[in-house]
Image 1: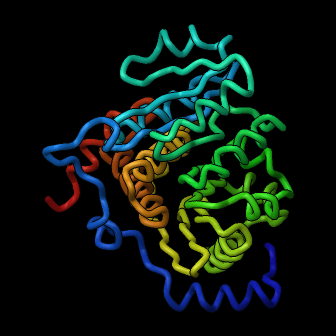
Image 2: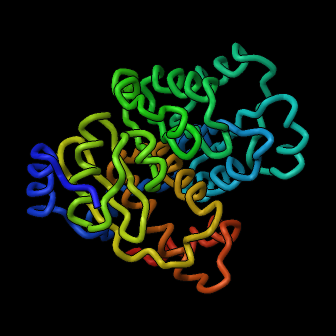
Length: 294
């Protein structure tokens, strides 16, 4: 097990003195809701970087973003993959690009409210550069999966690039690659490590696991202690990333959006039970939402 150095020990003591268990009481008042004069753009526009040849991850994330209430959800897809995406999507828009300039033009659409990059994107230089371009807009960005690995040992460059709200969603392996630190086994030390990472990057860190930790640079910490084991299935993390992005696009603050998304994600899995696959989760989000106090 990793032993905390002195700076981490200070974070450990701070974390254990005030962390909170995830509960709707912490964020429910900030959840977005449509009103009588809402339209699709006012309800939030999500743009997701689509991968190729891995295409399912971005589609799962897009469905979750739409189910979170976002008015428009679009996937930027390489032109070569357009037929694959378009044949599988109805309300989700597939926006093709043939060059980097085309992609960056999509990113700079002023109507976009939040970005997601990583699911199926590939841990490449191109993914890293696209992530930086999204961050330069100063709009909320969720960085997940391959986009985290693309910054392996480069967390300092992320901090320099982050101009707006940002959520990083690593599992243990991605956390180790990004920060060069193996996550501890015990919850107190994991919390301390997540807090240190949040300060290093000036981002919300969502460290996934049996107890998912949401840590903020200002030392706020929420721990979700109720995730069912059925969420250990391929694609579940992509759904979670899409949920967070959808809530961000609707104006929810990043720390609370991450906590709310984790709660809804866990509740959706509980409602399904045994036999859960990632494709089941987006359709269960409305039922999970109905579990909240009216």
